[in-house]
Length: 133
Image (cartoon, rainbow, N blue to C red; front, side):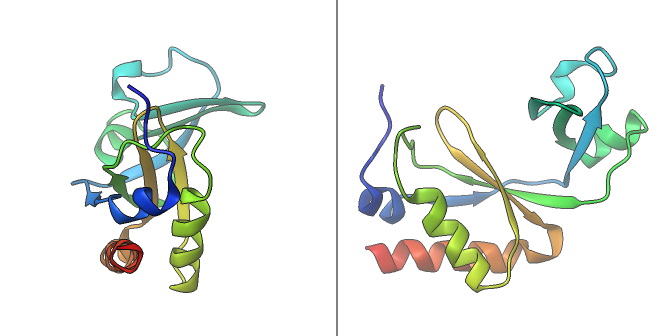
């Protein structure tokens, strides 16, 4: 089933959800270092494989990290061809001095923010959604 493409509808119905837990970004030099089941996201870059996983898993596998994030999911099913959603929420978060790292998956957009900014980010996203309605 295709996702939503209309920006106004996406913003009105994005319904951000703050997932429980602490999440970190690590680098694997090669696959097979840890079980892939531990990964929330895996992306191959020229320097290695970026992996997002729980801080608990990273600590268990003795992986280095420097950024502890909260994970926010926009529960609206956004189409991968939708235009403007990422820009809209990234600009709103930037206006609130909140850094974000975005993963666009097949069904949803996922936003990783500094753990200390999670509450503020949720307020900003909820306000953005209300403004669109």
